[in-house]
Length: 104
Picture 1 (cartoon, rainbow, N blue to C red):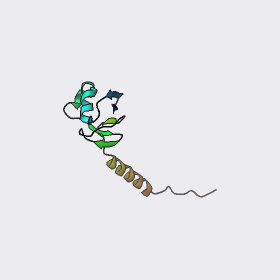
Picture 2: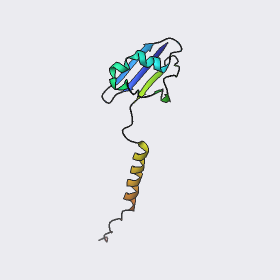
Picture 3: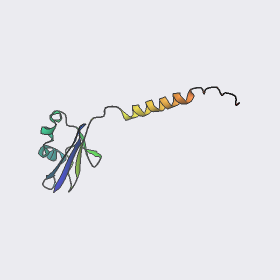
Picture 4: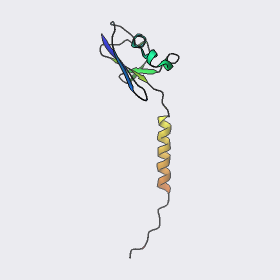
């Protein structure tokens, strides 16, 4: 069966298509894909991964044409970023308006 593996590195997209036996797991596909050679930083700490956007672990059994995705760690917490934007908008709304000038 054919499966795909993809990783969006900061500077490029790395993709492979592999032919693996039925019942292959995410871990087996990772080992066969060459991702460890392409990204040596993953050998000690494998990245988070998923299949079509659904997070999974290395024991997940794959099906024909599944796409295994490797996820980069977040640089910032999206919830914290949202809170900061909301606080910034809130403080902008509380600023006093400039005085109106009389119409001539």
